[in-house]
Amino acid sequence: MIDQVRVREIHPCFGAKQNKGRMHLPVCPGCNIECNFCDRKINTTENRPGVTASILKPEQAIEAIERGLKLCPDITVAGIAGPGDTLATDNALLTFRLIQDRFPQLLKCMSTNGLLLNERAEEIIDVGIDTLTVTVNAVDPEIQAKIISGIVYHGKRYEGVEAADILIKNQLAGIQKIADAGITIKINTVLINEINRFHIKEVARQVKEAGATLYNIIPLIPQHKLKDYVEPGCNDIDGARREAEKYIDVFRHCQRCRADAVGVPGKSNFSEQVYLGQLVVK
Ligand code: CLF
Image (tube, rainbow, N blue to C red; front, top):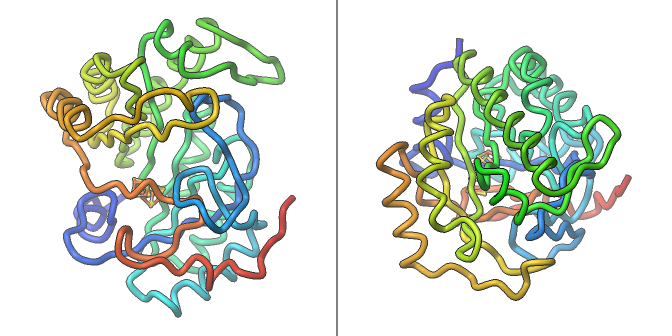
């Protein structure tokens, strides 16, 4: 049984008040959806989601954790957040199994786009994930269809409202299954003023109903196909948060971390020391 009090006390993205750290393990190269704002990159310079200096194999991730814990004993969470999707391959779940054996003291935190969440929910529960984040940018297929160009689902590519509908149904059904197992779920929504600004409260309402308990609104970084869109300002983010918190608790300290971030979010970063020389790109 997952200790929810422990999660809130030691997880920096789920309520920890003191300096607690997380270590991201970049073991997931590929993705199965095409978000119009997403630009996955291998480099050491950009500080944003979807960027990593290296892609590791699951066994290499275990060695990286050993280095990370020596450099930053405040790390309490082993997280996997890309750079691709954590369920598009088996790498993330394999890595979490190894972590369970070698570092049972660490919370296991997974982030996914949710396309395969419904069909892989039992595996996630079996692996013993403590916290799950699902990125849900819309619950209306017409709106979601403006955010993604397509999905690849069971070997077939879908586009438009059809793709959006498959994604949303799998996300909500998956959230429900994971929540029923007692796992704490946070939802990330990328705030795009021109597309989903006035849809946020409906996303918040529906994900809460499905079983999520925490909501994180991440302002768009204008890039890729949305490079000419406006970056939301403080008023937009604040307004969206106030609408969302009528339905669900809101997390306000997101640092838009890299897929290989190591340290206390916003305070320390040891990714170069941990991952330098690990440029193993599959
Ligand atoms: Fe990583 Fe995400 Fe887990 Fe945290 S990050 S997988 S829940 S351990 Fe946290 Fe970073 Fe924001 Fe993510 S500050 S980008 S919310």
